[in-house]
Every structure is written in C-alpha cells, then in structure tokens.
Amino acid sequence: MQDDVHRYNRERWEALVRADALFTRPMLDLDAEKARDYLGLERLGLPGDLAGRKVLCLAGGGGQQSAAFALLGADVTVLDISPGQLARDRSAAEHHGVGVRTVQGDMRDLSAFAGSTFDLVWHPYSLTFVPDSRIVFREVARVVAAGGHYYLMCANPFFSGLTHESWNGEGYTLRQPYADEAMTSYPDQDWVYDRTPSGRIVREPREYTQTLGRIVNSLTGEGFMLRLLSEVRGGDRDAEPGSWEHFMAVAPPWLEFVWHYRPGVPGS
Image (cartoon, rainbow, N blue to C red; front, side, top):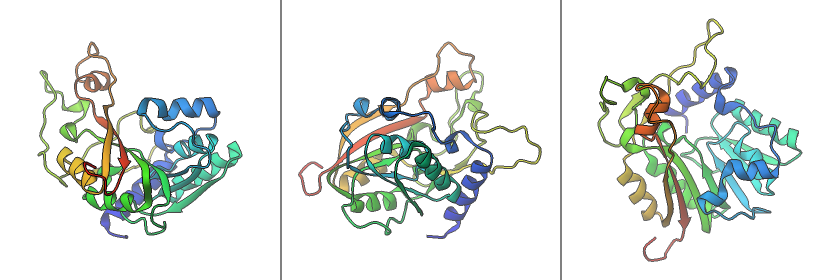
C-alpha cells in the first residue's frame, strides 16, 4: 500500500530515526524483570507466560517492545513502515542475544502473514496515522488466533489534536471536529527529539481523528470482546496551566484497550 499516507509516514519516521527521537531509541538495558515491568502485562490483565507465544508488534519498531517481549521468551515479529526503525529492532535483538523477525510494511496490509498466526498483537500509538481504522482492525482480526489478544494504545478520541499549547487562559480549547478521519497536525513536543542541530527538519505528524464509537463498534463487529479500557493518566493538576504536565492532568491524551478475540461467540 503505497499511497500518500504511506509515503508521508515513512518519510517522517525515517527523519525521526535520523534525529534519534524518543520512540526510535532501542532499549539496551533490559532484563526479564525490567521487560515485564515495562510492558505492564499484569496491569493489563494479559497472560504473563509468554514462552513460545507468537507476538506481533504492529507499527511498533524501534527496538523497545520487541526486545522486551523477546526477553520474556516470546516468538516476536515486528511490522513497521520505517526501515530505520526495523534496523533498531535488529540492533536491540543482537544486543540482547534474542531473535526478532522484522517485516517492513503498512499496518493496513498484513498480507505478509497467514491467518490466525499470532497469540498477541501489540499495537502502540500509531492508529491515528491512518484515516480509516476499520481497515487496520480487519487485518488484525485476520492474523490473530481465536482466543488471542489485541492490545491497542491510541489517542483519546475526545482530545485528539489538543495539546498544552491549546491553553487559552481558562482552559484547553477544542477546535477539531469530533468526526472520523478529520486530519490534524501539530508540532512535536520538545521532548520528542533534539532541535539544536541546525538544519534539522522533521515534518509534523499528520493524524486522523478516530471516534470512540467507530473504534469500539468496529472491533466488536470483528469478533473482539473488550477486556480493559484505561485512560493513560499522568501530569500534575497543580502544575503551571499551559504546561504539558498540567495538560495531561486535565485532558488524558491516550487510551489503552485490551481486546480478546472470540469470533462467533455471542456478545463479542
């Protein structure tokens, strides 16, 4: 799938790799205990015994989650749009002495994998980089095995496009329409990558709003049962208004879902 969305995302993530952005830095100080804490499987209610379990890190390159799962004994595959990100997965795997399979591709096309392949699909923040989430969910439903799980972290639909810079003196002003596939763009946060080298240019993310109704109804329609929904909370309500810390305390920007794949079961 080589449309404009694909090309923009690939070019942006290659630029982020060159900038050594936060989400492109492989985790090289992990052991099994740190890996388990990092993934938070117990908090999410996911099976803790991963030995031999087939895990797909979906649009999750960079040598972070893949290394953690491999250290816990999982059979790990990473699909990512960025060759640079996948190179970091291979680097992390070599550092830790574990095996990780890397596949370059788009989350909207998982045809590289046979049906019912994975026990767990782990999907970190990336869903909003494509307009129609339903395409992704259909692909996930095809490759996850019955009884498997789908972890999804995504933008909180009610605050999508909102940042700490939206502070107007009294609150954070919503301007983005609450509608599926509305495009939004905003500058990366200062902590994402170092701006100091002269001439460094990383294009802003292009993201597309996904309503909560579409996310939930699409996944239940594919045979998934919701097991957990969590707002990713943080920040400090006493922090300076208009700061990132204050914004996170007022408008949690991310959601986490854990879905159980039970095709053909009533209520799923």
